Structures are given as structure tokens and as C-alpha cells.
Length: 321
Image (cartoon, rainbow, N blue to C red; front, side):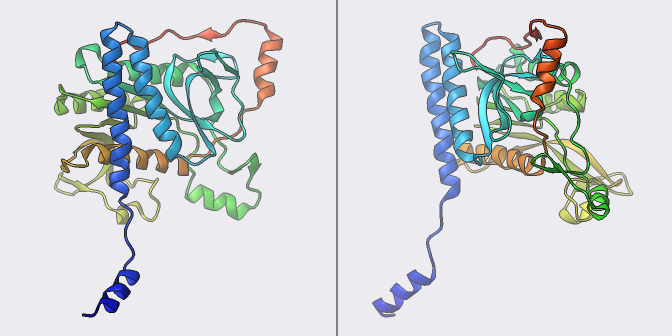
């Protein structure tokens, strides 16, 4: 083969972007932040150590998400001015929902209606400190004590509703994901991970209040998956055909279960974990419909009955993460 032919083949076969390696490099940034955090812990500055990791994760996610989403941290506030505990990550509408307040330290107060997702970041996993149970308690407080209206079935975004009966009927057959609050946990490192105990904990907890995914960067991920129930009582993993054309509607023969996936790629295991988390988060954001907060509702409640913000008790201990 002549050199000219080899050059033509190179042109016809363009190089590929090594996307997994890019995720690996971003995950490595988080690991470096953990190393810095450990140095701060030795000076007994626990809060600064935690901030080091949390800020890096927020920066990584902020680069990855479309500009319409804002990645911050702080508290969620509903229209009655009830306030959630402090949250490491809050992903909100970055276009149509101004925050209510920003502290000098950067902690923000987000209208509940504008929030897509919340996250808890831990430098390490220490089962005796019960980080998963604490985050479940936080999610429970938010969903039970803070109030927001579900997105109407005929809502089409940007404050507009679908008008035609045909559109409403199609939406009835294939309902939107509406404004489910997505929750996730990210552990940078885990030496003491007992997969069976974590699966049991997630399975036994009230399913409406558990995180949607738990990512252990150096180990694997816990996530909800569907299996198909066979006539003999056994199960198999659900495929696209089992959803009857709609990935958000499970059939009667399907059952939602908690699964664990371990990373087998020793070179890019950190990148795989971050990619998995990003994929599920994007799926949620693509499907979720939120309505812009009506700021007059927040102000009218304040003017009708002036009062201070009702703050919920904290549920998480200040630890290494």
C-alpha cells in the first residue's frame, strides 16, 4: 500500500474522542480534592475539608450540565417559607427562577418549585456515622414538610399549557415525568462498603424517600432497575421492548428493585462511576418538567402573616465528607 493510500484511509477514518478518559480525568479532580481535604482535616478544620470536595463536585457537574441548569448549594424554601436542612448540591432552573437569598459564604435559598435535584457529597464512607440513613431522613423532611404543587399534566414548559385536546390525550397516554425531586449521593472513597447491607437498607426504606442513585467512585453504583417477573416466579432484566414504547411506564409484569453494579475497568473505574451518575441525572433532567415559582405567593404569605423562616432540624452529622 502506498503512502498516499494510507493517508486517504486516515482521512476516511476520523479519530474518536476518548470520552471515558475525560470523565476519568474529571473524577481524578475530585480525588485530588479529597487528598486536600484530608490535609485540612489534620488541622482540625473539618468544615473546610468538606467544602473542598463539595466545591469540586459542583464545579465538575456545572461544566457538564446545559446552561439552563444552575448548580449551587444551600437550602430549599417553599411558598410558606419553610426551609430545608443544608444541602451540598442543589440543581435548579437557571433561567426563570431567581434565588430568594444568598449568604456571604455562598449558601443560597432556592424556591422549591425551581429545584430539579439535590445531592449529598461525602469524602469517605463510614457506615457507623449512618450517612445514607441521614440523607434519607433529609429527603423525608423535605418531601413531608415542604409543599409544592405537581406539574399539571398539560404543562408544556415556559409557563404555557397544552391547549389542544389531542395533545392532552397524548399526554394522558404517555404522562410526563413531572417534577419529581431527584436525589443522589456521591462517595469519593469507600473502604468499608458492605454491598449486601446497603442493598438491604435501600430495599427496606420507604421508596419515595430514598436517593435515586448512590455512587461510590472507587467501587460501584447502587440504582433502581426493573426486572420482569416470569410465570415460574423467577426474574430477568427488563429490556426496551418490555416498556411498550415508553421508558417511563412500567408494565404489570415488571418490578422495581435495587441493583448494584461494580466497575470492572481498573483503569477508568472512577470515570465510569461519574459517567453513570451523570447519565441518570441527565435522564431525569430531560424528562422532568418544573413550573416557574410564583414569587408573589412567597411574598403574599409573608405579608399576610409576618414571621421568620421556619427552619427544619439538621439530620446529618458534620464528618469527613
